[in-house]
Image (cartoon, rainbow, N blue to C red; front, side, top):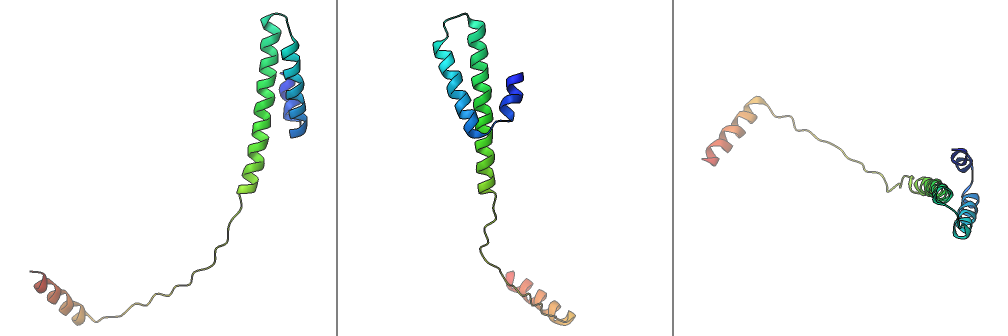
Length: 97
């Protein structure tokens, strides 16, 4: 797990260099599966940290607000008397039947 802490503190360029170096070691290695699996795990961890840094950079770029303008509106309310409302209701009811 030491490499996990190491990779979390690396920059993007350092991670790319580390991934390249680990891949070279992996291709040169001719031993047993234990070391090979450890190298693969280290490469996978370094790549995940690199992808995370790239996504964080991308989110920061996309996380901006686009100002498209302002909208003004006004609301006017007509004040009808009770008699006018009743006449409208009765008229619309009789026209509907």
